[in-house]
Image (cartoon, rainbow, N blue to C red):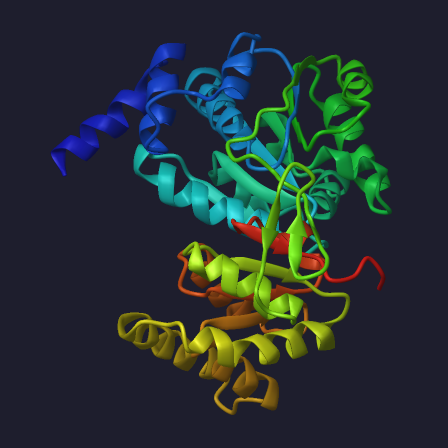
Length: 367
């Protein structure tokens, strides 16, 4: 307890150096060093200047956000707003950061609903996770605490080109107008016009093609996956079972993106008997417990709840917007922990959450 108090006192009562911040972020993420993309960002003026960071998914952009956030809270004594395009993303970030940084005395909140208020209670927090629409509402309702924001982190800024891009653009413009010295950190997947974004934000640009895991794209044809440079022969005429069999043999997980909710459910039902036969006794016990949780989300389970629970017992699940929020949360966490071997989902999953999968399968390009 005394050690924790002294840690809080160290960070909340005095400024900390850039090297201390770097060391702290590495420790919190159990990393020994920064990756090439992060090192590139650290060569910029990340403590003061706005930045656009454009790099592939899972390349570690969040680490840059963590560095800038700690600097803003501890050294500038300002608030940080982290805005995302979807509630699911905001919630995912909130849980992750709260788990990592609450012990430093950082007060972390999430606000994604109630568009008719200024949410005055947020004035008590240092780091606020929200959505673009909610932030737009806070600005419209003239939340007084916004004047104390020093850093705006914009997740998925490439969404500017989407149908919801107008709201995001308005939010960024308004925040920069309200706060003349606002630092903006824009995080983006690899996009062709990153330089234009940087110019618009008067920001430094970090562009990297670094990937921690090499991405290979292949086509399944004639009982084989053709990757161009090499081919993997499979011994089953059914493409789905063949791909899953090969994936499980490597002790990895597979994620299927299906065109509709019904197709996602049908694929899960098709693969469950096969996957269930590959499970070890300990895995079965763990999945039985998970299945009960999925089933008991409602006092009176629906037919969909019963179907999902029965599939989960066999190491397979489907994921789409028709599931209850708690069920989606349970499924996502179980897949992250490698309890579930196969997940079938609609494309909305790709925009909503980050899930690691060794093999991603897209049976059709049409919806």
